[in-house]
Length: 420
Image (tube, rainbow, N blue to C red; front, side, top):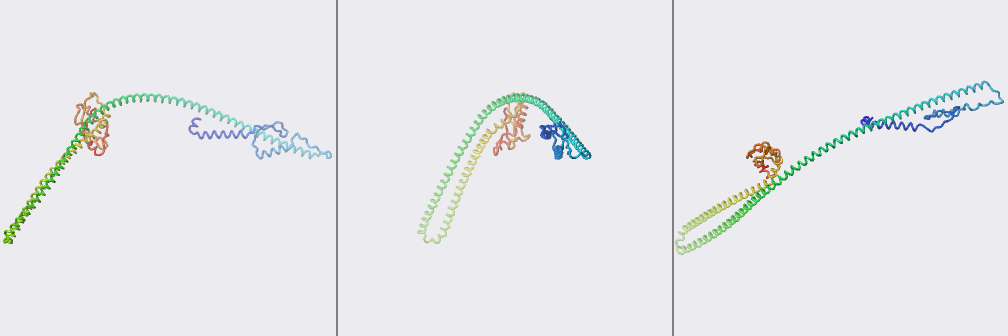
């Protein structure tokens, strides 16, 4: 029954409801309060609750309306003598009615017997169903108890396993906490050392940058002074040249006036010679001025080129120092993180005594992925097992923490010093 209920609970429920409905219909259709009634000449009748159809109602009405055997026969009229034929006919009629009543009574008794049998069958079915329900309930209780015992056993096993897991987890947590504490102490010591080294590197970078800035400022002041001196020298030379030209012009005009006074007669003849002399003098003066201007331009160009070369060298030195300082700052930020990441995956080799370090060459992709086969030991620690443990830790720690953008270029191919 329990298996049937588990497989199809709806079917079992509908079956129970159907039996309950039939039992309710049976109980409500039987009239248990019907009293004995007198019918005809019978004193005791079998009580039965029958469904009264219109035909049965009609027959009951006819039987009630018919005269019973106890009723006295009608007396003949005194003045009329009895007629044998009428008496015989009345007797036959009374016999027929009596036979009809007997038949109907037998039919009613059969109907009542069938009703009793049906009621007994329904009672037996009800008792059988009640017994089946009781047995099903007992079976369900037994299975429920067995299931409860099984669940209790499973719960006990689960609790035992959970307790074992909890104890194992507590042991693992204790060991992990001890290991984390040891690593934290080592990391704090390493970070303190790295902080000291980083402060030294930052101080060196700051001093180098300050020295480069000071030198650049000195070069800029020197260049500005040279530029100012050059402009002043050019201005003095230009004023001197103008003064010289003015004096030469005045001297030529004076000589020309004297020659005009003295050589008036030869003016026409000497005019051409004078023009040629003046032309030659002007040409020579212009040539001299051009040569001097070219010489000044060459000197100025050489000075400017020398100044530009000094400034370029100063800029290159400043850029190199700034780049070195920037690389040192980037290295001070990311190399400790790489060192910490690799140290997390490093497995101490058997027989390792400490105090060793190895220099390896790494090649990385953007994002910190280590290129397969790119890790090379370029300075061995003297212990092959230690060197191989470092190489294995680097591959296991991939991807490594590296910066993005231009700062990543210094980590594409770089040498790394590993110290446990």
